Length: 182
Image (cartoon, rainbow, N blue to C red; front, side, top):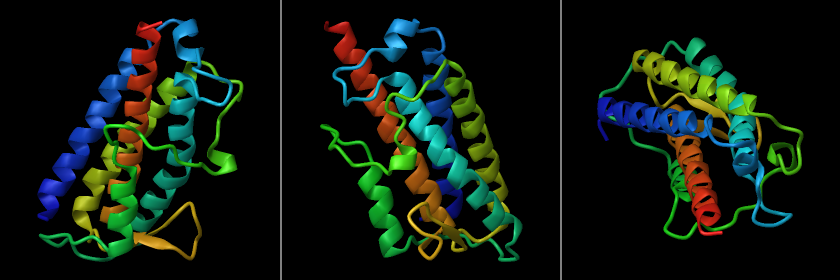
């Protein structure tokens, strides 16, 4: 895929997430904290989950970009594992449940509306990093939250994290739809 097209698409998707997050800020506390059942996340917990991933990946991406002397390439080809991880995060017609790591699970955490502002700030930071990545190769390696030994290409990492965000924004839309039908 052409690097420029990939980066433009990623920037667009980040902007869409910011737009949806902004709409959440006007919702009532009851709407933001209502859950389908005791084991399901509410809207604020979904957003906090994104924040916890952002807290790991944004510094990892920034570090990789800062320490790279690689030159940008006109085309990016993802690695097989990176493509697999990125594709697995894409929202589907019926979201399949995935187990999350304990440190990324916000179920019953004490949260307030500030988690939305934090997530918006993280999305803005992601857009800055995508712009900065135009100066380096998207083939450089970034640590994953699974293990420091497992590294994905920067282009795959961007796609994985942003697809993960899209997945949970779809989860939030589903929660809102269920609430409207109650």
